Length: 333
Image 1: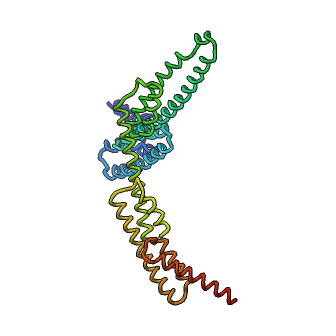
Image 2: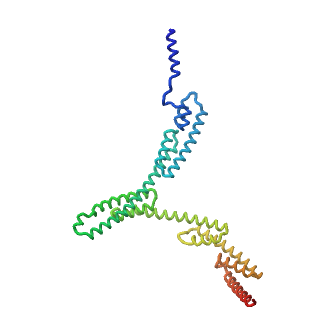
Image 3: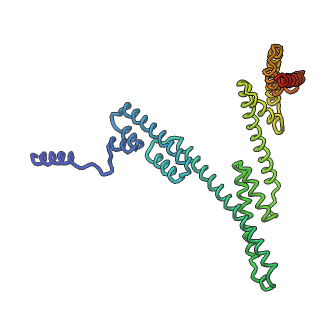
C-alpha cells in the first residue's frame, strides 16, 4: 500500500512538469500577434469567466479591425488587389467575424472586376483598329498581286477573327451598360457593328442611347448647379466681372429652368442697382466740376447696365465737354 502511494505521488509530480502541447498559445502570445479570435475563444471557456478581460480584448479587436480595414481601403485605392485580398483573408482567419468583412470582399471583387473590364475593353478596341488595318492591307495585296496570290490570301482567316472580335466587343458593350459606363458601351457596340452588321441589337442600342442622354443630362445639371452657386457667391461678393462672365454662360443653352431664371434676374437687378448708384454719384461729381471722375463712374455704370436710361447720353456729353476743355487748355498754353 505504501509503495502504491509513492508511485501515485511520483506520477502527480511528473504530470505537473509535463510540457504543454506545442499548439497551445498563451493569451499574451495571441494578443501580441493580434489573434483576437482565438484569444477570445480561450477567454470565454475559462472558468470563472472574466467579463472585464473579455470586454477589454473586444475593444482591442475592434481597434485592430478598423485599422486593418483602412489598410485594405488604401490597398484597393492603389489597385493592389492581391495585397488587399491577403489582408482581408488574414482578418477573417484571425479576428472575430464582422459583417464589414463580407461587404469589403464584395467591394474588392467589384473594383477588381471593373478594372479588368476596362482593360479588356481597351485591348479589344485596340485589336479592332489593328484588325481593320490588317484587312485593308490584305485587300491591297489581293488587288495588287496575281490570281495565284488569291489562293494564299488571309482574308478567310481575318474574317473569322473579325467575327470573333465582334462578339467580344458586343459582350463588353453589355457589361459596360450593366455598370452604366455608357461611353464604353457606345464605343464597343459601335465597333462590334462595324465588324459584324449581323450583331445589330435594337434594344441594346436604344438602352445605350438612353443612357448616354441621361448621363449627359445629369452632367449638364451638375454644371448648371455649380454655375448657379458660383454666381450667387459673385453677387454676394459684388464681383461684377465674375457676375457678367457667369451670366453670359447661364443665359445660353443647354442651361434652363426656374433656378436659372431666378439667379439671372437677381444678377441683373444687382448690376442695375449698382449702376444707378454709380450714375447718381457721377451726377454729383459732374456738378462739382470733376468731369474726369464723372466719366469714369459713368463708364462703370454703362459696363454694368448698358441699357440704363440716360447714362450713355450723359457719358457722351461729358466726353465732349472734356475734349473741349482739353482744346481750350491747349490754346491757352
